[in-house]
Amino acid sequence: MSEAVIAQNPGAKTFAGGALKAAAVFWFVVAVIGQWAFAAYTAARYGPTVDGNFAAWNQGGSLIDGYIAGDLVGNLTFLVHVLLAAVLTLGGTLQLFPQIRAHAIGFHRWNGRLFMTTALLATAGGLYLIWVRGTGGGAFDPWAITANAALIICFIALAWLAVRRKDIATHQRWAMRAYLAVNGVWFLRVGLMAYAVITRSERSLEGFFDIWSWGSFLVPLAAYEVYLLAKERGGAAAKLAASAGLFALTLLMAVGVAAAIGLMWLPRLTQKDKSIGSRQSAIGNRQ
Image 1 (cartoon, rainbow, N blue to C red):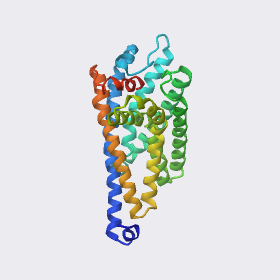
Image 2 (cartoon, rainbow, N blue to C red):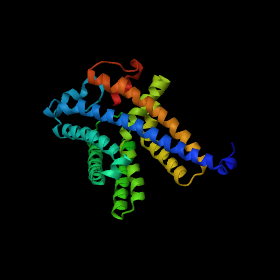
Image 3 (cartoon, rainbow, N blue to C red):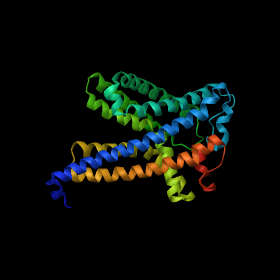
Image 4 (cartoon, rainbow, N blue to C red):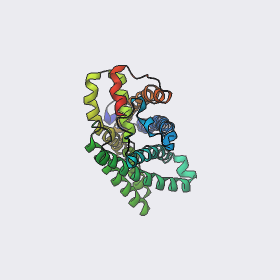
């Protein structure tokens, strides 16, 4: 069906709008499942170590240098950083529920303030860990993390300024961008696991990691901009194209979520090695 025919067909316009909404709902459901699983994993793995058993962080090959003997400030910063990530993951997804915005606006506002404050603290902690402490041992691209952090700070500031002006529509767009940027670390893990499951290629995994260190926050942000353009300005053809693209990306995300839960997070909690063969051990060492 040509674009001209679609544009003249009211039924096609309705279908295209419904398809875009359905794709967005599909993305939201998969994201909530994956992020709440990640929050549960983070709390279960690192929460019990608040008693001082920091050496447990380095068990199971999940971190290169999460714990460093004698570095009390660095170890505490790391613990606070990962626990704040769990708070951000839960609180951020709650901000996306339209039912909460409609029927519990007070909670939405205070949870939003908590999300912004926690995101800024976690971002500052992450920059300290990368640039001052050297956490990651060279596995992570410090410039990608710094760029991600800069976007987080910028988006939060713009979201706050918009809500101060009572420009709710603009506030929601900047808040969504902040949410996506904050979850760059989650997209990093999910994207790596999806790539590992689909390609099962040890040789190309290292190269993909270098690329995805940037793509983990830039691709979701770009996808959101395409979604916004299609939703607010696009015709039926644009909406259908955006729906297909978002649906495809969500399917890849679902593969990554399932792989991360079944092959990375659960095995670490149960201390069982169920990695995707020995070829994917590099993923575990970088997470």
